[in-house]
Amino acid sequence: MVVLATKCYVEGDARDRALDGMNSLVANDVGELDVDWQVGVRDDGFVQIDVTGEDAPVARNVLAETWGEIVAHDGGLESGEEYVGTLESWDDVGFTLDAGVDVFVPADELGLGVGSPQQVVERFGLVQHLPMRFVYGGDPDGDDEPEPSRLADAERDRLYDWQRGDGRVNVNSATRGETRATVNRAGHAQDIVTVERLGLLEQSIVCAEGTDPPGLLAAIGSYLPAEMRCVV
Image (cartoon, rainbow, N blue to C red):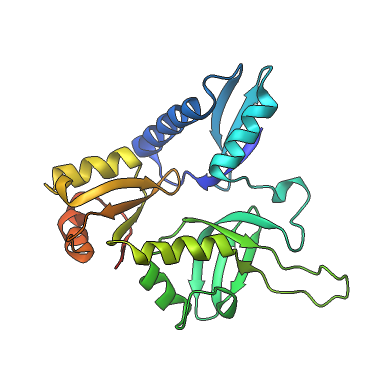
């Protein structure tokens, strides 16, 4: 079994479509290996893949590498190690990530420039449930003086790279296929480069040169009932 660092938090037909899509994505990742799998969702929303067969250890490693793995249920997080959690909330003092347990990243450990956590969210186009890498703080010296957790260097680099491009519109609560179809339906297929998958239900619409991200958001917003933010 492997618990992926992505959530399925929609219900009804949307949930069925998301899990069907997840099954197809797993097939793309490990379908050539000698394994069988079953896709499920834990009570906390994280996607769980039960893998059996001769190549099961290899398949679990591939899925963990591709999606990130939630490991807190296997004995906790180790100080100084890098993990993946989903962005669950933010306030004036920092971010709360869900990595199987809540992990708090203080504002001064975000490493994403000046401004409040809310301003960081707006500036980088962050949406709830976005998978994000972090380094767990804890108490590495055993002196009862815990160090704060921080966003991983690779995560900071990824977000700054978003700002160096031609703009993005980030979306949650929609699959990649649904997001692509929405852009097409709104008549803006020529205005994007691709839809980049960030998680099962978190996508990033990469704008073509000359496309105005806020304008694209306004154009597709009525077609897609989702949280959306721009990266300009």
